[in-house]
Image 1 (cartoon, rainbow, N blue to C red):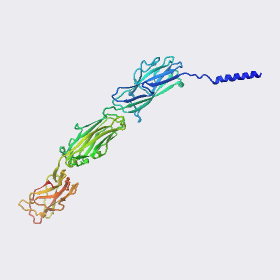
Image 2 (tube, rainbow, N blue to C red):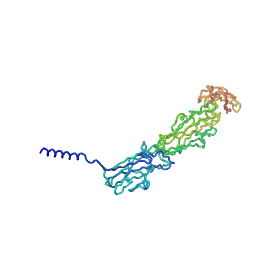
Image 3 (cartoon, one colour):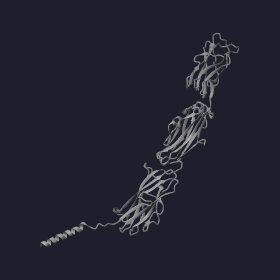
Image 4 (spheres, helix red, strand yellow):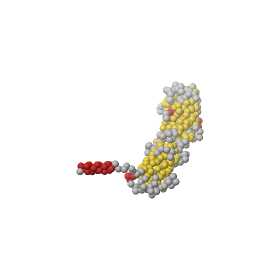
Length: 482
């Protein structure tokens, strides 16, 4: 009995050992995808608008011994986009199945179609689920107006048995990379109104009107060929920060206005200022976030003070630049223009009386009882010679009536007042003094001979014994260099 029990126990232990160590063999059901050029990603590299279609090819291989039919699907999981979220044009990323690249089953995609975010069937095996491989071709189609930048996305190839058993599904993710550029074509076109690379203003061509100056002012027209795929900005900079004459004088840059027009698609457009602001890099225009196409015109318009700058030919160089946030994708456009301001010599005097040009002193009725009566002229002097000058008063004769009676010197007097000039005059008649026959200096400028204006007041009085009559004389002015 004892031996029999021992044998029974050993037999039971042997049975338990067989159940703990079963057969570990299992079915094969997997999928792989490799790029024909090597690697597991789709890398299209640099794609320019003028390139041929960029092509990459995946070899898809299915290993299966499950003995049932299977399908392969494709799905775009993450559309190609830049870091800022800008998506590639859906029509640019497409695919098709290469006919005849399979041995057993059926390829579905015969024509090129966009890669879709929907799950699309690309292959169905034979009924026995035989192993197979096939080629899928992916393309990036260049576009003239493509948005440049680094794009990346992700798609999936999904292997599924025909019974759609979720636990048997195999997913292979494929990363996709593309670098779209604007190519070697020009980002912007910059031209002048004259057709040359020179901006010229000549004061001798100005037409002076009551409302200001008129003339054909130089312009720069900028045409941007977008979209650039990123915001861009347009700047102007005056190289060397000044415009200088051959004599070494610097031009007053505030005498030239900068006016910008157009730019309807921009996010920020400079309206108006002056050329002095271009001594440092001056922002003129900021584009939309996409860097859309646009067109702007910059006009350089002299103001009234331009003519009064020291006579001479002033030269400088003006740089216009376009800069983007993605310099590698849209190379900055830059152009330099020669800038010339030709200020003609100016030495002129203009006189107004009662808002009428010329000298016309009218005192009306003057008597001892009514007291002195005043009349005045306004003198405007324009000089850009840089030399001191004098205003000379010319009196043709004493103030006399029809019978030759003369007004005494003490009763016909004048003085200069209300002087407006950028420098202190060297001399002028401050207090009333007699108007004497002949030529007499009434004003001397400062050493710079700068332009200015002044009022000349004349006072006429009659004594108790002054003879009645119509009194007159002739008065004029001349401008002479010191």
